[in-house]
Amino acid sequence: MANPLYDDLFGIHAGKDTAFLNLTDGTTITYRNFLSTAARIAHVATQLGLRPGDRVAAQVEKSPEALALYAACAQAGLVFLPLNTAYTVDELTYFIENSGASLVVCDGRSKDQLTPIAERFGGRVETLNADGSGSLMDLAAAMPDSFATVDRDGEDLAAFLYTSGTTGRSKGAMLTQNNLLSNARTLVKEWRFTSEDVLLHALPIFHTHGLFVATNIILAVGGSMIWLPKFDPDQIIDRMPDATSMMGVPTFYTRLLADARFTSELTKHMRLFVSGSAPLLADTHAQFQERTGHRILERYGMTETNMNTSNPYDGERRAGTVGFPLPGVELKICDADGNPLPQGEIGEIEVRGPNVFKGYWQMPEKTAAELRENGFFITGDLGRIDEDGYVHIVGRNKDLIISGGYNIYPKEIELVLDGQTGVLESAVIGVPHPDFGETVLGLIVAEPGQSPDLDAIMGAVRDSLARFKHPRMLIQLDELPRNTMGKVQKNILRDQYRDMFKAGSKAHNGRA
Ligand code: MCA
Ligand code: AMP
Figure (tube, protein in one colour):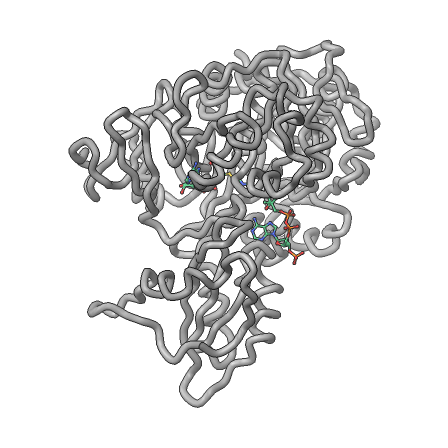
């Protein structure tokens, strides 16, 4: 027996004294040191009583130890469940309960709030702070630095990533070892990664992009990363001369282009810039090429599927498209019943392949609604394939806002707004934003005779939802536009408010 995920991404580097993580303080963590830390954490988890298949939820800042926790879960056969650091206690309570996490690893500042919640659902809490301190690492310090890797099958679960939905309830996407490994192997080949690569890593590690795309690729080839805690243009510009490649969401690229220090000289030795998680404007693509001479490589993926398509490494990287289906991934443009449409027509994108997840944790009916029996996953994205085979994403068949690469489901915010005093109903829409691509606008209708306190409503939103989901602005309307079926016509609202956050415009809560 073996453990494919651990063996192929981590175990192959055992004993190597080559650099894995280059930190902002100038120090380097070698593969050997990193794997020792992971082994110690794996011992802690097993000594705390965790068994293969148990879930480990982690809401921690980005650090080498946070990444070692992922490796430790792989080695001990545990299911890793990374969580956005912006999530509030309300949001975390749901994830802890739904996943049944046996261990919750959090920042020391959240310990008092999360301990009773974890215990209520049969788990426990250990802490891991941004500087690598905390009870998890205190326990780890006393453990041996090697651990007998737990046998796992490629079809065993490796991770849960929670993704919201149109009903407002988050779903735990179950990803297997094979899902992660197959995608990493494909992307290594497609994007020509080697052990010589140094990836400038400024993405968060609680989502697919930063963890399973960027990090797994580097692990698969034994390369190294410049490990930045977050996206900071000063640090990116400072460290770019040491890198060969970078991955980012479109906001990274628009922010870099807004900085005069970002020049062709600074990027001349770089071999690859990848963009994804949200649409890259053709204009950004063009400006980037003009400034640096590099053509950004845009690709398309999802939490449930990892990466599905990519523009070519060699050949034309066509702006405004997400390229071709990756080797091993089948992609079709369909009608609502999954029947392929004639070439060139717009329809729903469906994908099938070794990258596609196993389903949503304990939600068979939601799994059945999105994952067909024949293995095709209904992405909810609308697209077409042009005459040269490039896939274009032209819209979404799902009520989703993507702000700075983070997904926001309006229903979740509407549920909070609808529950506020004096609010009859609400509609939340995404409108263009110069920095985040899209941002959140909340529209509310008052109960007859009431005048809701918009500041108090924003206070309630702050208490229950992560910051990135907060409406940038609340507007009170007399009524919401509806079609003859009574359905709110969000397209009309989106058209009406599309210039709300144009560069330079100032927006305030208030009555329309
Ligand atoms: C931070 N804020 C945001 C966002 N990020 N608000 C809306 N949308 C956001 N994305 C809040 C902050 O809390 C802050 O609130 C205020 O907005 C301004 O913060 P700022 O300093 O500008 O933000 P930042 O810290 O610089 O972050 C912006 C960012 C970051 C660098 C674009 O959001 C980021 O790293 N995004 C990457 C997301 C990602 O990895 N997505 C991949 C998902 P206040 O002013 O109150 O303090 S995986 C995926 O989608 C699929 C699978 C795929 O294809 O990859
Ligand atoms: P997530 O749920 O975070 O996995 O986000 C997946 C969604 O992000 C997809 O369904 C798309 O709507 C969107 N997405 C990812 N990459 C791209 C891209 N390159 N262009 C347009 N949309 C994208």
